[in-house]
Length: 204
Ligand SMILES: CC(C)(COP(=O)(O)OP(=O)(O)OC[C@H]1O[C@@H](n2cnc3c(N)ncnc32)[C@H](O)[C@@H]1OP(=O)(O)O)[C@@H](O)C(=O)NCCC(=O)NCCS
Image 1 (cartoon, rainbow, N blue to C red):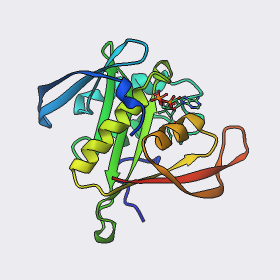
Image 2: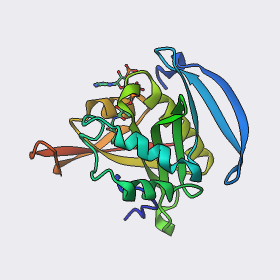
Image 3: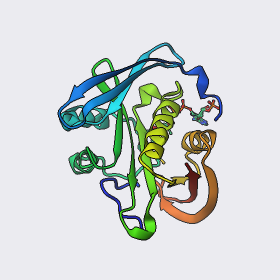
């Protein structure tokens, strides 16, 4: 069984998104920390950096302003306890945030299995604010996460996603995740109906 450290959710066309700047800033947790800035398809420049201990309020602001669509296929409740679990990932797994106009507009994180027979095997999650869907941010964040995870020795990333969450399935497929199986009626939706979940995975 995967040991979930801090989450409870559980080479194709991305070259058009040009990383315009990569710099280092000093952070008390990470020492030197990479910060990258990427121009989205709509021209907005978004910074992607590691989550830090100072980010809790900004994360709460993001989650409190999520539209119903963002959390439609997620794992409610989206409360402070969930944010605290995300914050627990600081310095343990890999947790990235996207920042625009001094607001956090996305989070993506991966975690690893700590058991000996789970070595190098992990999972991931991503949530983006609705104002940043469809502009390439999901691609940028996961691509960066996968690169960092591989650099940390992760061998495989697996995840489960509701089959009807077309944007997420498309994003994962685009970045090389394969559908490995279908879990029938494994998710009870906000529509009070059961939905299939796809098991997806990628060998890094
Ligand atoms: C899933 C999510 C991360 C996608 O992020 P995004 O920034 O919109 O993704 P991108 O802009 O990088 O697009 C990735 C691909 O998905 C496709 N896509 C985006 N929205 C789509 C939609 N509504 N239907 C079908 N495909 C869609 C894009 O067309 C793109 O493919 P392309 O480059 O071939 O055109 C975002 O919608 C989100 O945060 N959703 C809510 C939380 C969630 O569901 N998380 C995943 C849980 S497992």
